[in-house]
Image (cartoon, rainbow, N blue to C red; front, side):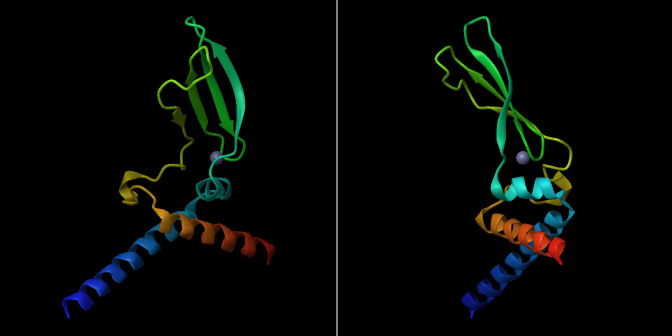
Length: 122
Ligand SMILES: [Zn+2]
């Protein structure tokens, strides 16, 4: 009995999460939705030589236009983690309560992208 109650509660949580992610996906710009489910399509924008012989390299996503800044040493190896600058609307608002997207959320985003594409063809 307790197991069945736990199962129902988990199903309810999943359903609520699905509705939250689907509602968020619906409000996303199509380019952002595609980057959320396909990942960004980076291309080099520019690079600047640093005094230590390394580089600061800037990439831009061809779809949703955020910037990714990489710091490279003189051998071209990454130093630290890249920094991202997103346009408004890419990151969920804290008030949305989405938090980090998981595997199931990404599946929902793929289906939302497919539904949107199918709807555009009708
Ligand atoms: Zn992108």
